[in-house]
Length: 182
Image (tube, rainbow, N blue to C red; front, side, top):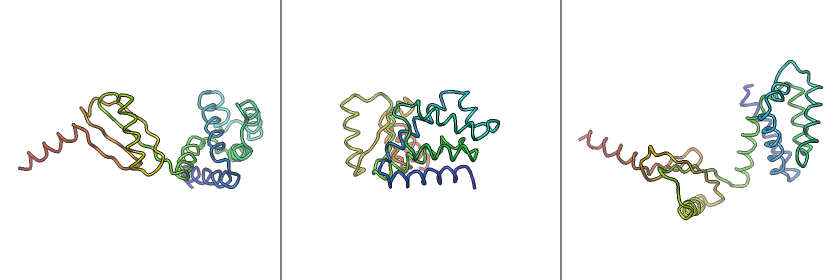
């Protein structure tokens, strides 16, 4: 089994447990908080992800961290983390977080969108884009804006794997192709 497949399975299992208990968002928050903490501390990352430290010591570190984190960590996430520690699979944590979050967002009908413009949007333009995307998507849309002067003008919107390219650079490229074909 590949690491990606394993991470998807662990994320799905946590999702199923969270769905039954009704705390999908809490588990997401706990998992994300723990992953960020580990990512921010190199020594902690080496202890938890390395093979030199035995699983009982990793479990002890996880339990200590669980008690120190703001609000603690839910029992389901704690069980997952200790399970991963016992099997030497804590290195999958970043992927598990990513797959779990995607599954939760999909469950709640939330769509991520990335909007790229040549210049920063004004607050009114930003609000209009968000409103338009929410109306088109039929649900909640989380929008991330990026500024890329290379598109010259217009907007490139990526929703999931679909890209809507309304940039000036793309229009100029299409015009060039049309002229070359003639």
